[in-house]
Length: 161
Image (cartoon, rainbow, N blue to C red; front, side, top):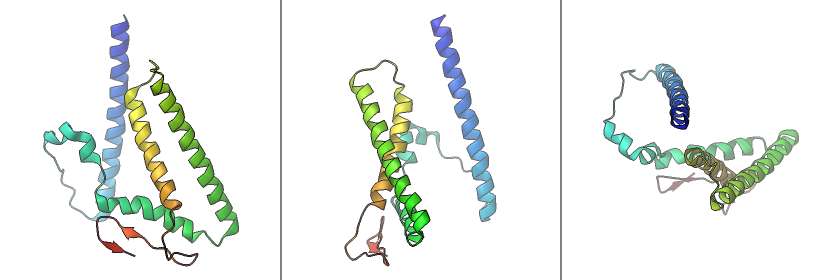
């Protein structure tokens, strides 16, 4: 009975993941159409699935979007007091939430809690790491920056802008 229940739960999770992936593939198809790129199906070899996490990691240059976009947005609202206040409060709330969730997850893992879904924890950890990276980028000061000037080191190159 328990085995049947576990198999059904796994099937439900698999079905939900398949539905999610299908929806995102459709979303990607729509995006490709808007770019004017050829919409032929790209079929990578199945061997990419053998090292899935590595294959899904961001290209070094792509990391610039993750870091620069929040910094540019925050700089754009610097002189609007109402939006700046909301930005600052949001930053603090997000930082506190990320730290608290990571601490709680680490505590449960350290205690050997049997009610931990390691896959879910791994995915959540990746998401929290991404948030923490954005928060760190927003709180980084580069020598020579001031309220009217931002400097970015362009990752994947030896350039700064």
